[in-house]
Length: 144
Image 1 (cartoon, rainbow, N blue to C red):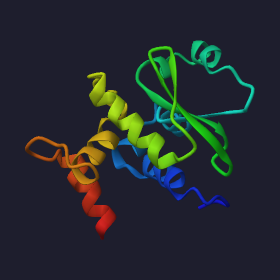
Image 2: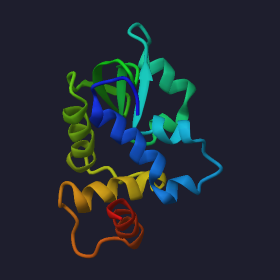
Image 3: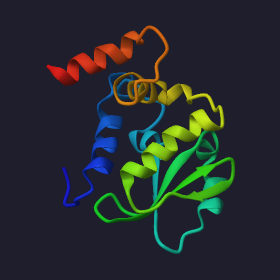
Image 4: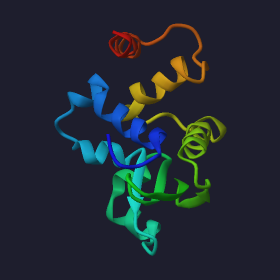
């Protein structure tokens, strides 16, 4: 994958690239899809000014990673113009991001719903009732 020890971060990005419903979207670039979950900045960048330039980042909470995929330094959750420190572990940061949707009662963005429903159903076991067909199909493909 890459030359980093942060396998969780690598796998999140890979998962975003593999989900069939996201691969079919041609209107939104793959980079833009990934940015909606994890956005990489340099140490001195001002994330709030970047959000102003990229309106799609205002739609839902996302991780802001200081550093790069190969060298992540720390993570923040950005939600409704607020920056919340989430430490140096990508696993913890993603759990916090995922939990933020539930804690703040924010609906998953339509574009990323399969991604988050996958975590609902197969990672955190918080789904209520039936698993969505697109999520079940993706899980089956991963297991084959």
